[in-house]
Image (cartoon, rainbow, N blue to C red; front, top):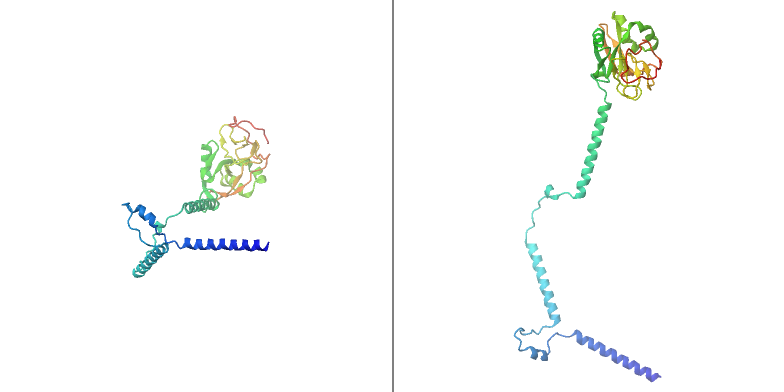
Length: 294
């Protein structure tokens, strides 16, 4: 048994030694054609004389050639002067698509917010001279009464968004109980100035939902075309869904009889049931009959 093991070990060692020697012979091959191969190809005109270079010699020659080439590049780079610095043209840098869209979005948001802010400021900014929201000198009471009568009982002033109508002197006592001093100033002007009547300044909007209320020439009332609310000639409610009479402005009269209307101060209209003048419809309605509330 021991002998068999020894013989097997010797055999394995011999095989290993043969493999190592064979591997070294393969690595040391110089790549020269054998004599037999040369004799076979000696008559061929396509082949020239074979050089007697080994593979390692070829590798060394290639490595040396690369080293020399890199050295020449380094020497050339060291010998040439540095290129002068030229700043880049901003136009040549360009903008990527993402940058373009990002900047466009920011710009559009900025313009939109700026426009909205400017519109808000313009809307909220008080008007210091003339126009709605300020004190407007309308004219002499006598002249205004003439214009009202020439307009069949109604006079519209667009700059103040208001209607001017005549208030009869006979209803002054009832008006003094119902209306505030700011409203009474124009109503009493007729009696104080020795004229046939005073003046009322009414806001053009319906107190129901804000529609502009036109006059009706046949009924001699104000009649709202939106929901049918009706008011007599001095803005007291006569019918429809409105919660009160037409709103009105504060008035002041100078000693010479000139009327000034403060369109920045709006006074709520009289409550339902107020009827100081007793005026009823003087003809057919323009919008349609509504349930009377006083």
